[in-house]
Length: 204
Image (tube, rainbow, N blue to C red; front, side, top):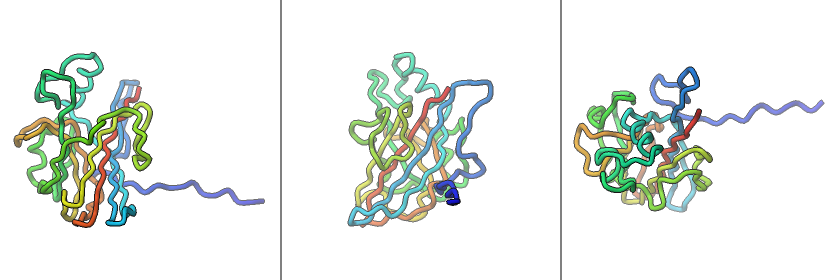
């Protein structure tokens, strides 16, 4: 009898002390999802792909409640305050000692180092639902994807391990849409390009 092959395993990175996915009890609606990082060398070959859980903050929850009700989010909720267009930016960090939390604001990352050149606007046509980018292994029909594509001259550093989405020109105490750690402490050089996908899946 032909043996049954073992299940295929995907290695993922998880944040400090946090399960890969979480769900509230009692059938409450939650926002879950994955951050996917794809690092490519000068020839376009994939060198590193990491995945980790990401925490949507309390302000992020409020942002999605505004959008679900077709109401205008406040200016500090990742829009200009007068249009629904998303205007948040992504930032990458290293050496952060704190862990993501629902109540966190940007000052929660001050123990670490902001990666120079990582403060980038979200790619054109993003955010979007039901992403079709094949490299985004966290996409889903009921997920919202935010993507930033870093060129060779952007965000070159070692031990990159945290990502946030915040408001443009952020202050220390700026609101954040999300925060993820456990990216794998990878290194990006001036020969590499990097694509970071933040996926938020709506579950019921």
